Amino acid sequence: MQAGPVVKAVIAILIAASLWCWIIIFEALWTLRRLRRAIRSEGANKSRMGELIGKIFAAGREEAFEAQASAAEADRRSAIIAAMRRRAQELVESCQRGLPNLAVIASVAPFIGLFGTVWGIMTSFAGIAAAKDTSLAIVAPGIAEALAATAIGLAAAIPAAFAYNRLAAAFGTTSRGLNRRIEDYGTRLARENAPVSTLRKKIA
Image (cartoon, rainbow, N blue to C red):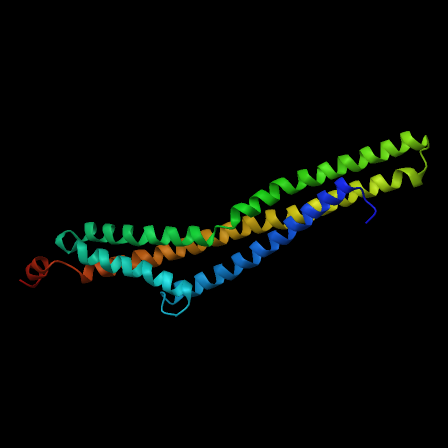
C-alpha cells in the first residue's frame, strides 16, 4: 500500500489481468463442458449449445436433400460433410473466442511486471541518492515494490499460459470428436438419400 503511484498502477493492471484470466478460464471450461454434452447427445437437448449442434446436423440434412441429384455416393457424402463442417467450424471458433486473450495475458503480464520491477529498483537508487545512505530502511521500500510487481506479474501469466495450452488441446480433441460424428452422420445421410434411379438399379 505504500508503493509509489507507478508501481500501484502496474499492480492494479496485473490484478485486473489476473481476474480477467480466471473469468475466461471458467467461461471456457463451462462452454467446453456444454459442447461435449451436446455432441454426445447429437444436439438433442434444449440448451443453446444443443440447438447449435442441432443446426450442424440440420445443415447436413439440407445438403443431403440438395445432393440427391448426384448419383455417386462419395460425392453426396463429401458435399454433406463439407456443409456440416462449415457450421461446426463456426461453432468451435465461437467457443474458443476467449483463448487468444489468455495468450495475450500470458505473454504481456511478465513484461508489465518487469516494468514495475525496474521502476521499484530505480526508486531504491533514487532513495539512496537522496538520503546518501545505503541502509536497509532506504533500500527496502523500492525492492519490496519491485518484488511485488514481479510476483503479481507471474501470478497472472502462469495460469494464463497453462490454461491456454490445456484448453486449446481440449477444444482440439472435442473438435475432432465432433468431426468424427459429422463423418458418421454424413455417411448415413448419403446412403439414405440416394437418388431414386440409383435405388431402382440396386433393386433390379
